[in-house]
Length: 108
Image (cartoon, rainbow, N blue to C red; front, side):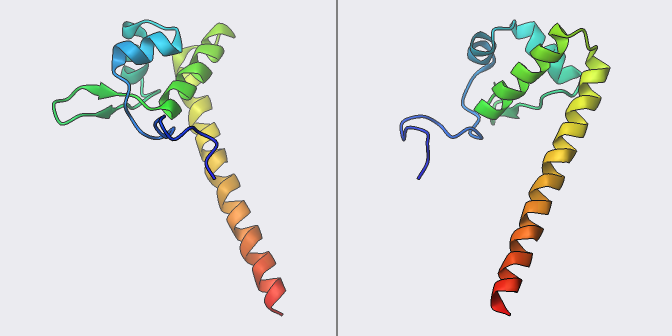
């Protein structure tokens, strides 16, 4: 069962325009554009080219904002996010392998 109310979009669904995303994230529209220029976020684009942000994008902006507040420059933030993303992928893969190993042990 999902913990999100059914009337809210999923965290991966890109539904927020840049102005709404900026307001929700507590940053300026130009800041979101800057983050995109530096490859820190990649909003989905509508058929007409309008940027659309998801809840996951907003969480990423919050992470970026926290790193900026700690004095990390945008190049450093990009590398940190790359490493965090790679780490998340590795953790997921490790969990899947562990689950598969447990299932195989159960069959013996």
